[in-house]
Image (cartoon, rainbow, N blue to C red):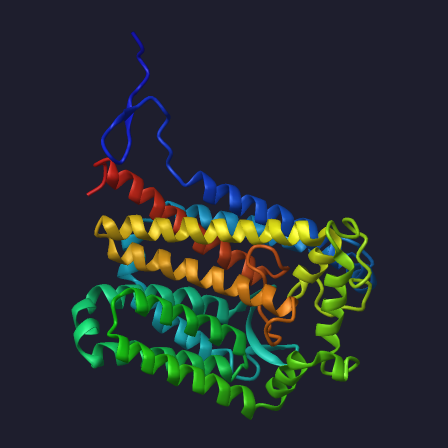
Length: 390
């Protein structure tokens, strides 16, 4: 007679399969995206790294260091109960607002490429806009749990989070960081839609947000230049349309299976920001349509698994965990879609990284942390379904 411990499925049926503590599909996708990202950072940055630091893998080494630091923090988060984040969501919101103000003060905030987005703590740089994304998700998740009835019945419950979003947006636009503003706004709107906000309120919000974003785009000379370059980059291919035309050339050279890993021509100082915002274009050139479809499939699986985790939490009555899972999934999916759309010439140019793949310490660490939180939510779902968690 077998002495192996018997586990049970969510429907209560016995099974001899080992109990899965985390979503294996989600973990596999995260690992795959990180590996492909490191491979492409190494390939796309080798020339600029050699020129600037006389060492071909300077950016890759730094990315690996950020990855290790992010994994250490993620290990702490994955062992922290989600009730902790619900309890301290307001404190995090206030702390992030203070940081968003501090980053705008000359001498405290650091200017990079014309934008004041960084706080320097010795050798460590903090990109506050990345913290603002997860902070807004946690705050809104807690607010939706506390004020669920008011939001569905009273317009005041709908207006309050809009005020917070407006303050965040103004501070981000002063940096300026239009891309982060779009991502946070889109994530908040998606989360509000899922909570059952009255349709007339939601339609009014969509019209107001769309109108505001159009006004902001048209009123700023550099944003207007990006918009016109997006509509017809070849009209001024050596000035405002230069980056986009070089990206499109990379896509054109890729063909079905690419020119081969490491054989990109556009990364040879033709394509600016090849290892950060336009890493996907280098991937398209070196790995071709096959590589593009592979990355699209991986992000699609990530989004589907994230939504399933949120749905499982919702059916168990764990509303804060559900809204947080939805928010994280919308954020990562939206940012990935915008980055790939920009690289392919489908959207105007914005300074957004490709989650888990583009070079950038703040982006890598924050992505690892929010995915650890998503895995923690899935872990709690599994334990509760087995009756091992209240």
